[in-house]
Structure formats: structure tokens, C-alpha cells
Image (cartoon, rainbow, N blue to C red; front, side, top):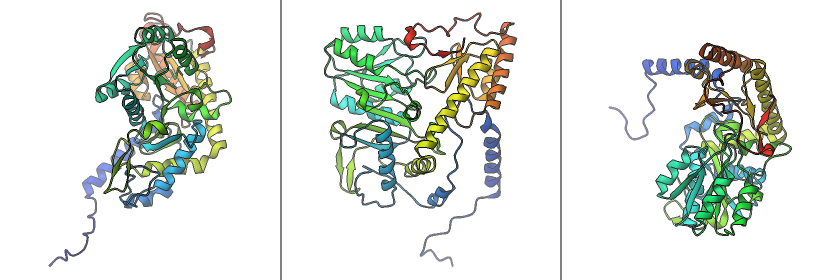
Length: 411
């Protein structure tokens, strides 16, 4: 008779299931070199974390508290938050944060805090903002107004000024892009704050979506304003993008005065409930901690410099092929005319209307870029009968922005 007094040993994986997993692994291995259109680094390996997969690690609640549930990675999460506070210019005594499941959760947290501060407030975001913003305002039941965007990806400051003027009696909740999804554009926080000052709007909230650029701008010589020293109230950064992670993760930071408004005590957990999710991944903090331990500040700086060099190589190759291409300052997102669907699928390229982009993450090499450019050029030649894909559709490579905010171009 079976002894059921103790835990049952986990059964082995059935042969057909193992075969299926092996086939999936082979598939991922084969397609991974073609990931050029989405900002997910692949230059990582964390074998030291594999043993932790045997335990139900769970970071439930405030990482700065002492939870009853002790199988957590809170000490590492706190160190990770400290790294982000330092490089996002967030005063330690005035800000608080936690490791999220990714950029969308960070954006949700920022807008949640803003809505709690200004229940009657209106959320303003540009047409180039990540799709999570529109979804979040629906989830929160918040009012919102979409602002026009410039062709270079930045928010249209004239439209923002006029819209704020018309609704100046309602506190604005501004969703600023620190690196837009398609263009890599950074909204000018100095200009946004000057508009608020010009209109004498003192009650406002600024959330920054810095999913990709939040881990690029800290490592360049002359970054655009992006951190808490630029007057933001909260910021969301992805951890699985430039830092590199096998699981989606990120960090959100906010001013402590805002987070204290939403904190609630949960007795059976033993900590304050200050986060969006209850149970949270404890692996994400370990991944980010390990990444920072491995790279250090000098390593991160070199990674960014290398990616920017490859981005410039991509622009030069596109131009040599007779195709317009550009990137913003301090951006590794290279914008070019949209190729055919076959090329988009082959290289996992992100398209939008008449444009597409590749992102020169650390795993994207010059050789890969050369292959991508050749395929894009061939695709556009076959479609238009000439070397440029911008003849028939409206040309998106001449931004309406002012000269001092034009993207980098070798044309």
C-alpha cells in the first residue's frame, strides 16, 4: 500500500511532453538571431539562479517591510530599487519603488497614484504613446485626452498647450514618453513644465514612461532630461528590455508622498499593501540584481555605447542602399520605410503605418544589420520598382518638429 503520509515525489515528464519541449527549445534557438524589431536583450545568462526555481519564492507586498512570508527576495529587491533610484536621479528619502511585471504595470501604478491624488484629473497622452496608456485609463475609469504627435514621435507641444489652456480648471495628469515605442522619441520635460508654468497650472502630475530609454539615458554623456530632477512624479522602466531578463520585469519609482496615500495594512501577510499586484515575482529582482552585479556601471556604459555605434552603422547601411533612415539622439531605435510582410516576419520587425524600425540591442550585430538592410532594400525595390520605398506613400522622414529637435540623420 502506498505511503501517503509525506509529500509525493513529482512525476517525471512524459516522453511526448519532453519531445514537445525539446522541439520548442530548438525553434526558439533558431529564431532568436532574427529578433531585431523588439527591445529585448538576449546577451544574458543567469545559471546561478536556476536552483531558485525549486522554491515558491514570492515577493508579496512592500519590499521594504519584514513579511511573515519569508521565502522572498526582498533584500535583493531593495538593492535593485537603490540602483534605479541612483540612476534615475530619485532622492532615496523622497521616493519609493518596487519591481513590477513590466512597463505596463509601472504605467498603471503611476496613473493609479495620479488618479488617487486628483480623482477629477484628466490624463493627457500623445498619439505616439504606448498602447498601455489608453488601456490603463479605461481600467481606472479616468478621463483622458489624446494629444497630437509630431512626425518625429514627440508630443505636439502647441496642441498640448492649447488643450491644457482650454481645461486649465482641471488638474492635468501628463503621461510623458521617455523613448516612444516606434520612434524612440523623448518628450521634452523642460518644455512641458514651462507650459504648465506659463498657464499657471500648479496642481498637476507627471508620469514618465521610460520602458527602454530609462536604462539607456543614465549611461550617455548628454542625456535629455528624464529623471526626478526634471520634475516627474513617477517613472516606469522595463527590466527585460535593455538590462536583459528571461522573464518580463521592470521597476516603478514614485514620490513617497504619493505612495503613502494608497498604502493599506494586510495583517495575514504582515506588510503594507503598496503595490498593484499581491503575489509578485521574486525571480525578477534576482535577475536584475545579478545583471547589475555582473555588468557594473562601466559595463552598462560600454553596452550602451556599443549599441549606439551599431545604430549608426545601420543608418549608414540604409543610406548606402538609397533608403532614408534615422534615429533620435541617444536612441538605438532606427526608423526606416516599411518593407513587405515577408521581411517583417523573417526579422520580427515592428511596423506602424508607413514606417518600421529595428532596435540595435546588445545582441544585434553589424552582420545582422547588413542582412536586414539587404532584405529591406530588396523588398522595397520589388514593391516600388526603385531603390526607395518612400516614393508612393506619404514620406514620414521629414519631421514637422523644430530644427533643434530633429532626429539624427546622415542624409
